[in-house]
Each structure stands twice: as structure tokens, then as C-alpha cells.
Length: 232
Image (cartoon, rainbow, N blue to C red; front, top):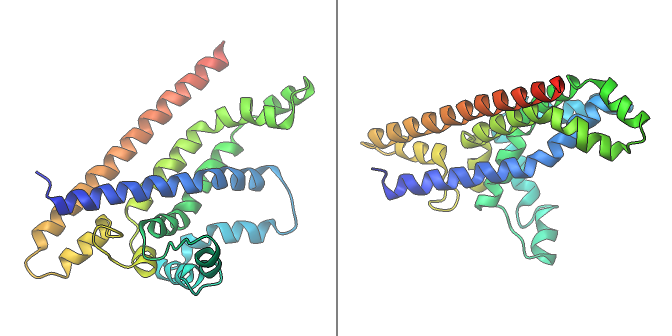
């Protein structure tokens, strides 16, 4: 049986991961489309900035978020003053940190899927009078679904395991920001709590495996459907 502490950590981790994916997905699709379908002179810099979280230490990302979104930060101060919003040291802040760290993985998966879309299909639809938005929504987007699923699952799994940026930005507050990795860290720092840390470790592995299996199954079903539609 799961303890109350474990249930809190798991539920908070799932809430943060799902929110992080929800935050990232629209921007990831737009970014992937810009990288594959447009040309502009700042494109190399744009690409580098998108993938910067992959190479930066997570603590650096957390620190930048802290100085930006704290009540005295250049973003956090206006949010607190005019909208009464403060995301530092909250689960929303944990979701934002996780979204930024996982964002490049989602973009890469969606971009690869978009590169595989047959441009001839898009051009044929345009020739028949379909608007760019209709071409994207009826042809491009459905063919991108396997990549979108892969990106969502990768970002979800990465968000579940986020530690450095989260603890730097929102600290390790029980019932508020203490996700599975932060709960494990707390147990590791507590003498005699190695068993509880091991239990959370096993739980994290099980959740990650289930996510990857679900990703494989959804991709397989989606590819089967796309192949069937092509055969009609």
C-alpha cells in the first residue's frame, strides 16, 4: 500500500508533468513548423535557443527562472503587482520549470515527424484551393500525430524526473512542490529512510515504463490508421 506521503508526491508529480506538457505542446508544434517550413536569417539562433535547455545545467535554468519570476523579478514583479500572480515556490512554478527543461525533446520529436510529411500532399491540397490553415489542420497535423505523441510522452517522462531546475526555482516544500525526485532527495538526506527512497525509485520507474509502453502502443495504432487511410 502507498503511504500518504507517497500518494502526495505521485499526484503532485503527475499534475506537474501533465501541466508541463499542456504548456509546451502548442509552442512546440509552432516551433517545429517554423524550423521546418520557414526560412529567416535568425533561424540558427532560434534553433540554438530552443535547444539550449538540453545543454544547460538544470540549476542554471532554475536560477534564471527564480530571478525572472520572483516577486522582485522583471517578469514576476508586474505579475504580482497587476495580476496578483506569484508562481515562484508553487507547483505552477514547478510545471513551468519542467516545461522548459522538456521542451527541446518535444520539439525534436515533432520536427522529425514534420520532416517526414510528404510535401506533395500539401501542395496538391493547396492547388485544389485549400487555405494554408486548412492544409495544416487536415493534412499536415494528422500526419504529424506519431511525432506529437512521441514528443508528449518524452516531455511527460522528462517532467516526472525533473529535479535541478525545480528545486532551485520552487524549493522542496511538502505538499506544494515536493515531487517524486524531490521526495526521494529528502529521504536520501534522512538517516534510515533509504527504504522509502527505494520505494519511490521503483514507483518512478514503473510510471516511466508505463508511459513509454503507452507511447509505443499509441504510435503503432496511429501509424496503422495512417497506413490504412493511404491504402484507401
